[in-house]
Amino acid sequence: MILFPGFLSRVGAHRCKLRDGHDPSVYQLQFEAVRIPMADGLTLDGWFIPEENAERTILVCHGAGANKGNFVWFLSALAHEGYNVAFFDFRAHGASDGRTTTYGIRERLDVRAAVDWLKRERPGQSRVVVGLGSSQGAMALALAAAEDPRIEAVVLDSPFVSPRELVRGHAARLPVIGPLAADWLLALASLQTGTNFFVASAEQAVAAMGDRPVLVIHGDGDILMPATHSQRLYDAAKGPREIWFGPGTHSNIVTADPTGYRERVFGFLEKHLGPIPGRRVRYGKS
Image (cartoon, rainbow, N blue to C red; front, side):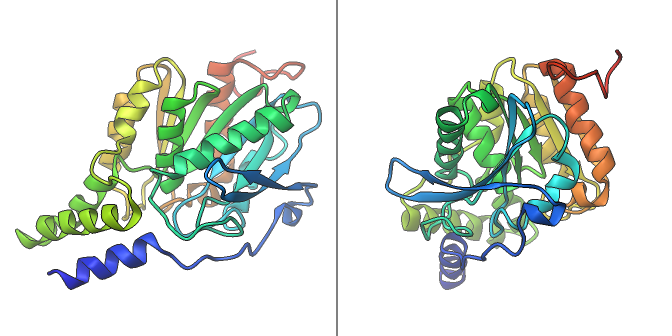
């Protein structure tokens, strides 16, 4: 009862880092390798993939235990749509610095640092910044967007409402002992990382975004994140919102249906941010 949650919290918060296996060249795309400095002394590793004459950038935020190389497949849906695409490794992931993961809580600072870099180093190409986050990346993105109005729209793929509700939901399969073990695990993780895992809420963050557009995506084969989490985030959005229960498992809807993914994402953005200047309307009515 005491030792096992301690082991899980330790392993979960201090993961082994996986290096990139692929880069955007698998799609014959030119890209720039970038390093993003953080105020706390860490440095994040990233890529910037330019699109000709584009003034909008999609910032892709990967899931826990993954890295930007694992998420390069999102380019099958995101490339050549009039947006630049930026990827980065969260702290304690891939080629970025750090060893401690907090499942979106501190990672929100990584998202904001990436936006800082885009606005400072690529201002003309990032007049509009859209965030696309998956799993932990969705949590970090929602928390960051609540604090940073420069993120003008968000796409939350395979999200969860909060670390507490996710852990307690899975632990509830074990009557009585499960919820107790879940709270003990969360308390240990909070102590080990200096982060409060009990209060962070993507649901509250989405509500705090006000009238900014929110698209929620959930795979019909996702057994890790309950569909109720996506539904609650959709319900919390106060501005333009859509939800899509697409085909695929956790964080893999884009590989199961890249065409549908592309049409859903860019149709939503075209509808609520307006058509891309100089390009015809592709996904809405002309």
